Structures are given as structure tokens and as C-alpha cells.
Length: 112
Image 1: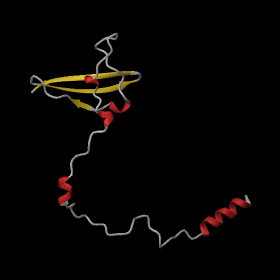
Image 2 (image 1 turned 90 degrees about the horizontal axis):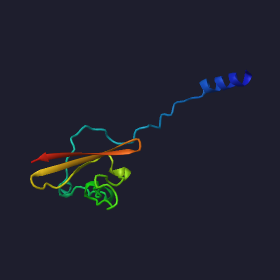
Image 3 (image 1 turned 60 degrees about the horizontal axis):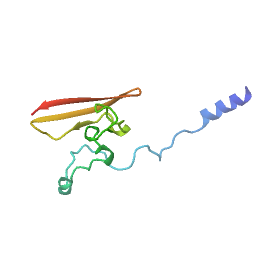
């Protein structure tokens, strides 16, 4: 009990104020609109990561397996929307989702 009382007294008599320290970085905080620089308009969008270039719908399946089965997708390919190039006036959209150990690929054929 004596040690707890000493600790209690120490905590309440210790000066907790630190006037020179602040959690915010120094500098002005203004709400001015962002001004684009001329160089910003010349930048191209970032390139697609190489692992997203492997579209499941374009991969060949083995001869011995069922042609309706697709290979198991990489984990980074899940929950992305893929659009194939338009052929014969039809655009194909696809997305692959995982449920437990199963993978479901949904296709949407849209006439353009």
C-alpha cells in the first residue's frame, strides 16, 4: 500500500506540461485551392502492374481439363474489373471473387 501511495503522489505532483513540444509539424495551415503546375499536366497515368496484365479469360487451358475451367487466379487479380477489347460490337467485362476455397468469375457481355 505504501508503494502505491508514493506512486500516486509522484504522478500527480509531476509536471506534465511540455510547452515547447507540439504534435503538429511547423508551418502555416491554409485552405487555399491546389494549383496545378504545368508539369503535372504532362504526366502520363501510371503503368499497370505486370501481375494484372495476366487476364484469366485470355489464358489457354490444358487439353486434358474441362475447357470451361479457368486456372486458379493470383491473389492480386481478385476483385478487379477487367474489360476485354470490343469485338463484333460486344464488350466483355469480368470480375473474379473468392468464396472460401472457390473462385467465381462473372462475365458480362454488353452490346456496344
